[in-house]
Length: 340
Image: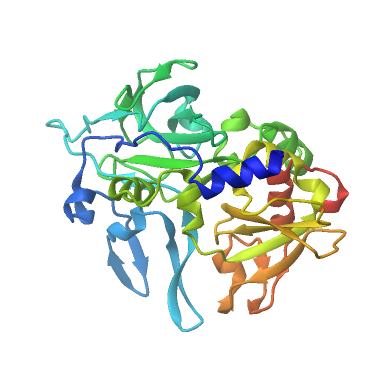
């Protein structure tokens, strides 16, 4: 009965998510002016300087190289970098940063040097699809408190340029919407990295970001009503099959990932975007004893460049790397030897 209910709400569109708003007054992305919305990055490539706004968007948009006959980015940017609209006479940004939708302030990092994000705030949203988080980084000031309920438009702070590699000219808000991968990130961090996590569960490594601006656009167009629907639209880059007993924690956290009832199948296949965002889960008849790569998008170049080094190989062949296994262990909450 439990899995029938899960399947039923998937078919009917799952839970309707609340309306998302952009987190600052900059609305240029909805006015066909992306260059006025996304903050550029200073780039020097093949002997030429440039300031591409595209490097402020979501995706593999940084650290360019030529691979497989095409120009690709090998560094993944998990959020959207939003330009300020207003500055004072000295060039200091003045834009207020506001919650994208209703939720509760889950974490605040008030110390600039403690993260590449600089000062940042995480708001957790729960409307029936499990923990979805929005993150607001590089803040100048913070005007909210942990545990504070917020709604769309509640002020969280002021846009700034705290963090690594940013100056006043490139002041911007780094904005993410993502899934919280684990409620025991500290245990994973200690187990695999042999040190404590500075930011607890709200470390950026524990937040798997989706295209926040794309999600908001699709919601406004009426094409998606839930996170589940939005992720169904994405094309997977690879799939990993694991023994069925290893997905219990994932089932409880994000049951809508399933596209069919689990039943008594011996294994489970999890499909991922190139960046590792889990998109959907299938029951599988394969019999595996370890995490096994079972599907992979063919690519003429190196898969390491397209998967944050979690998959190695070229063409249609690949291997789950040690880094990929560590990431899977985080998602599944399994820290034993089978995933090390």
